[in-house]
Length: 271
Image 1 (tube, helix red, strand yellow):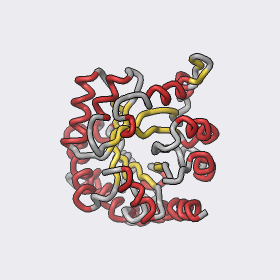
Image 2 (cartoon, one colour):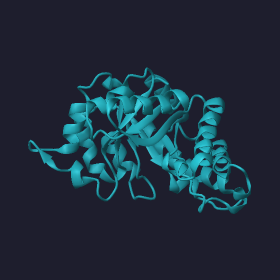
Image 3 (cartoon, helix red, strand yellow):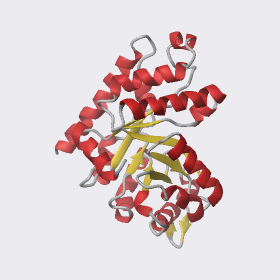
């Protein structure tokens, strides 16, 4: 998927909602556990109920790897279903990979070629040669951790280097890497006050923003400082949407929550 195709979908749906498919078997409706692939069935029903409201889906691979081969098959079935039924939707493998060059190349092949995701999240700690193998893939995006929403995010990301916070140094350095136009960045919604300074460094790149909803991030604050002429934001909500209900009508409840966020986004875009 190209950047322009993503922007088109955002404008068409009046939405920049990304739904995180972080499936915990302890939290899904019990009747699904009788099926051979309960995780996939849960995802399929969520997708069927919300695809008109979302422009992206983001499975966190840990929630699939934890269940072994069957979990990985559920991830494969989920991405295959999305690519077949809704090829216009942007897909994100939330894998947070990052290793030496030849290993990163294999990670990139796994997610971009075998699974056929549009993007994958990566950690930049090992530097350019751990990220550039991902950037080499045409019409694929590498979403690099920049300023995360977790409690310990600032332990390192906020450290001062050359009188500048480390996350700013990372952003500036990343822009010098080969094919940096294929970069997006993770910036947590709970760090809304930082968006203004981040936009001075990366004014045109898309930002994947987790933390709205269950983690306490505020959509209005994020958009105030992070929105661009091309929108430039993918707002992720996981638990707040997929676990809105826990009965046979769980997908309908998820759609209602997704609709609330989408309508708020539509109002913002119309302003």
